[in-house]
Structures are given as structure tokens and as C-alpha cells.
Image (cartoon, rainbow, N blue to C red; front, side, top):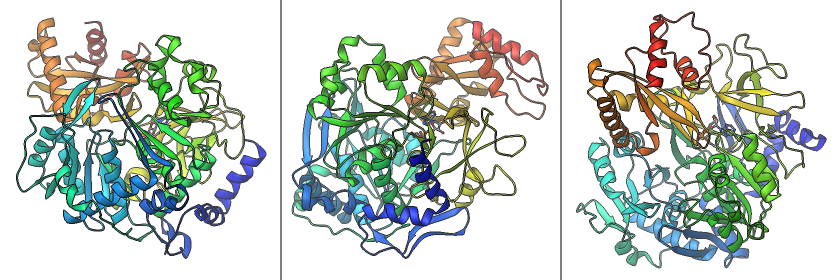
Length: 632
Ligand code: PRX
């Protein structure tokens, strides 16, 4: 860490109030805060207490003075062949209309709105409209199945749900409406209304009278609507975003308002090196945290243009993202290692350097960035490529280079250093003491967590404390559930999760959720799901199943049939995104004598590694069964 960065970081840890009150100057406060940090109830941190502000105002309204005609949102769909630019003033209009519709449908400050949408501008209008009126959005990724959607509906208990008739993937229409109908039927707390953006993709769309509202129709009445921003307390929840953990029940990460605004603005400046007036292109989806922070909110809060891209990275050809960069003169791009690995496999002709001249930086996050991929893309683009490490819970980077502060050299394979505001510690698992250089430890953060991180788990303070702050008995320490190591130069390296979460193509999946889905099949007695190395996706899920009638899975045809049935079960309950790559049938699963599944040993065998310490193994034949199944 250079001297300048060291000083910046040290100030943030030793004088957090001084540090963050300066950062908070970049935000419009309708009423100034009276206290920077209230940490009187650890581990709950309240930032900018007494301040009143509004996220939508900071992202849109306040730019109208200087940037009314500047592009705010560029929409590119290679699925429906649409391209459309919304200036700040046009976006302001659309968001007012959406907010007014929401009001008519009964949404009030503090009410939840579930957004289940493809990557279309209306999805962002809906998100901004929620924060405009102080409603709490909960965006559910469009690839999730009805069962998962219903579980999120029941946890959030929304007043309104917003969806579209369909999404599209690789040119294939994916109807959303039937999923939404099924989810509402399954849910105990379905919303009163469902607002539907009809894209004309699904001619068979059905309408449920009284409940369904067609956006195109209701919009007519609201075209001149002006909806004032609701000035909310800094700690007012802005959104809930569900994420997977160790248990089968997803957690609703709750984000505040003031802290998030300040964190977004500071990160765009210090980490992402963005300037007002420039264009930011994040290739994620609004259903994920990267989409929330760096498609929807961060860029606009900082007066930048954001690109909303619907489509695949290789369609119509693998040069499409570079075409977008060229056409819209993108300065900052943010993507995932998996996407870059996919592009690396294509003909190099598609990465035409003439098309990427406007790019100043590429940021990659969500999963480990392997050295060959980092090297290839750095050489191809000839710009700094910055690996940044964070989580849904934190909302912005925990580890990263901060090139807006200091131009420190990067090391391949490392997301560099702890970011300002995060008192990062690597903790030796057995001693509970700080790990030495080059010694593997649990990556932890000494609270208070900085602004923008989760304030709690929606509706469950106890689970928040128990899940994240209870690894060590006598003190509150935030656990990331990742292993890490620091070298003698102070660079950190992430070594993988400590829990049962796996990372498939940058998407976080809980193995327990997949196991629960598979177990619901009538022919399954027991199942273990593990993440196994994959050259493109980072990891892929493998399922090891003990079937009810062992003989049933004896022949290859039987196994294939049951495997297909299990794929369908997972598709129906969780969505194709969670589908295992393979299902293997075994007679018994390896467990400890106390009955704990030895997932790590199974994973090691599936990756051709040594299964490790087996002293606690209950039945040694279980490992043979795994080995045999892998050879089937
Ligand atoms: O295991 C770490 C991995 O992804 C997890 C968080 O995933 P999610 O909640 O979806 O948030 C993604 C936000 C970028 C982490 O606990 N992870 C994330 N970034 C990196 C990473 N692993 C290695 N290197 C990274 N840069």
C-alpha cells in the first residue's frame, strides 16, 4: 500500500467520523445529519443520524440543473434489437410517471415492492420510483423459479409487484407472467396488485382481473404527474436483496438510505475512478448486488451515464460489448471473470482495439479472477484491470485497489488491499488470533461496518447478529465466510468460502437450497451438493444422491432418467440457474460420526484431490461409493 493510500485508509479507520463526514459532502441532504455514526447498539451501526435525504433525488433530480440533456440511461437490447437513450430529464419524467402509478396502486412510504423484471428501462424506472416515494424495493432475479419467488414474496410481504410479460434469452422468449401467477398463488402474502409491462413478447399472456394492471394503459392517466421526493431518515430502508447462505432460507439483506448514498458516491470516485459526464457500463443484472450498486445507483448518483444491456455477451457476435463501448464512448466497464473467460475463448478478431479506445478501466468482481484471464484481458485492452472483492451484504468493495486515491501496482490474482472504512482482519481459525503474513485466515471485519453495508436482515435482527457476528464468542466480528491470505507486501488473496456457498459464473448459490430442492423428489433419500472447479464458470454444482430404491439407479438408462427428473425439479423450484451440472448416484454419503456431511471430502474427490483428514469419517465405504459414482 503506497503512503498516500495508507494515510487515507488509516484516517478512515482511526477517525471514521471525520473521514465519512467529508465523504458525505458529495450528497444532497435535505436536512443535515447531527451525528455521523451511532454505534450505541453493537453490532448495529447507524450512519448520518438525523439526516434526511432521498436516493432518487440524488440520482436524478439534482442533476437536472446541469445535466438535463445529458444521457442518464442508455438501453441496448440485442434480444429485441432496441436501443434507446434517456436523458436525465426524460428519466425524471418516466420515474415521476411510475411513482404516480405506484401511488395510485396504494404504495406508501415503507411499503415493499417486489420487482421481477428483465433488463429493461422500466425495471430501473420502478426502482428509482420506489426510492423516490420511500417504498422499499426487492428485486428478484428474473431467472428464479416460482417457488423461490413465492418465498421472497412471503418474507417481504409486498403491496405491489412489478413484472413484464416476458424476458428473452439468446433470442428465446422466456414468459414471466405464468411464473408470477404461480408464485402469487403459492405465496401466503401475495401483493394486492401486479403491474405488468407488456413488451408484446408473449401473446398468450393471461390477465387476472382486479389484480393485474397493464402499465401501458394506466400510464395514460399519469403522463403529467409530478411526485415529490419523500425525504426519509438516513437509516430508512432503501431496499431488500435476498442472498443465499448456509441455510436453505435466503436472507433479505437490508440497505439504508444515507449510508448507501455516501458509500456509492465515494466508491465511484476512489475505487471506480468515474467522473460526472462519463459513461459506466456494468454487464451484470439488476437482480444482483453489482447491478443495484453499479448499474442502477452508483453511476447516476455521481452524474454519470449508465448502460443497461439486455442480451448475451456473444450474440450477435462476441464483439458486441466492445461495439457498445465504442458507440457510447464508455469510460468505465465492470464485468465478471466468467464473462471475460467466455470472451477469451472466442476469435481474437472480436476484441478490436480501435473499439475500446474510450475505456479507461475495467473492473472485475464476484468470483476469483484467475491469472491467465487477468493477464489476457490486461494485455488485450492495455488499461488497468482491477479485481475487487465484496458481497451482497456489503454493497461495495471490501478489498480493491483504489486508483482514484493512489496508483498502486496490481498483482495478478489479488484484489489488492482493504478498502477505506473496512477494518479488515485475517483471523486464524484455531487460535482466534490475527493471522501472520502468508498464513491462511478467515477474512473478517471489525465492526462497525462502514456506510452502505447491510443494516440488518429484513425483519430478523437476531439472525443478522447470529449469522454474521457470532463466529467468535466474546466479541462481535463480522465474518465474510471467505478464507484469505495476505502476502508480505500487504496484498490479499481470496482462497474460497468457509461455508456451503458456491459460486457459479459469479452467481452465489447455497448448496443447501439445491439439496432441499433435490430432496423433494419422491425417489431421493439423501443428497449432497458440492461446487467443483470449472474452467469457465469458476465452479459448477455436482449432486451426489442416494435414491430410495437403490436398484432403481443401477442401469445407465435409469440413472439418466432420474437425473433428468432431478434437473426438472431444481428448475421448477429454484430456476435453471441452480441446476446441477451432473447427478451421481451413490449408496451412502460420507458423514462424520456425529452425522455431519463431509462435503469438503466429496468436493476433493470430485476434483481429483486428496479427501483430507478422514479421522471423523463414520463409514469408510462411503468414500468408495463416491469414487465409484464419479467413474460411472
Ligand atoms: O466468495 C466471495 C465471492 O463472492 C462472494 C459474494 O458474492 P455475492 O454476494 O454475489 O456478491 C458479489 C459482489 C461482487 C464472496 O463472499 N467473491 C466476490 N468477489 C470476489 C470473490 N471471490 C474472489 N475474488 C473476488 N474479487
